[in-house]
Image: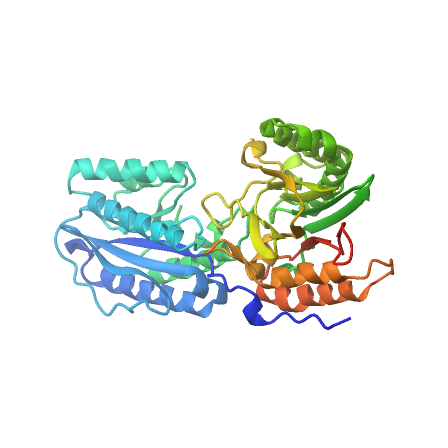
Length: 227
Length: 249
């Protein structure tokens, strides 16, 4: 009987399913000094940690939205190969949290559409919301953002991490954004530890297959964050 | 075949396949157990055993029924009943046995195909490779429908037709689909035609471990298995190139 030969060109190369992560950060004036420096270092370390993990490297796509007296995408969605390491962020102005979250959700929606249009599978998107204060932007925008996040998280279409930075963070508002788990308050400025934990969690998700319920290692947060 | 990821973390292969030929009806079945369902390999085994028997024993009744919804419901309920008994025997919950179900049954010049969950069913008709049923992944990559999912019958796909110009069917789990199914274009890889041809050309004389089977196993174990961390399984029913009936490895 003739040898059965299957060549590489007889097979297909499918794209790796993606984990879209939107990081929505408070860059208002109160974040000046150590908080913003530690936050920037933590985000860069997050990129490095993703780069070092084979599964997360192929799957993770990250965007960053900042909010102060407005909201802006400062890093468009990109894989770790194309993510620009942040050199500095200059904190300024007020805390338009609702506007920031709405922009992050819009950016996630656009990314999901792009995946679908190109036949790329993806995992449940993540939203990481970080603030050291309370919202003082448009009330209607805030309520709309809370409603959108609540609906998505309630329908298991979004994983939310609401993070308070320091004693001034409004944990009540963060709790509204995090209906499925309590918000976290960072102990001191443990951004690096948080982002290291986040990268491991992304890796865990990117290794999951149909039927897997990804259990996040919440115990791993102990010591440097309060649940 | 056990996936590389399962080999690394010490878990068992959760894919199962089955072939049954009885009373002029042939069926191939495949089931992929859910990753976090603790006894899903038992679920997959029960589903393939019971599914192949059900399709073979009830082929005429099923294919004659114009009420597709009733047929889907009948298949789903039968499999759920089997899983309930399996769960009782193992002392676990039915949800612990969660698994997908893909099957093709052929009798004479007619076929039935049933598909619940992810994985792919393809076929060759008039010499052209075609997709019959694509993966059902809901919205997210790690979500799909299982036989145990509430309302599984509603998302089950059901097909029937004539085999006149069909030279073979190929059924695969999502692990195999990583190499043989293009999710962007919803098309099958050329290799599928080759694999169906190999089965079609296989000698019909019964031997314990025929050459074509060794060749197929080698392809799955090396080429296909190395391109995914998931379990890989494949079932092929092909028309013998020198005969009128369909054959399987």
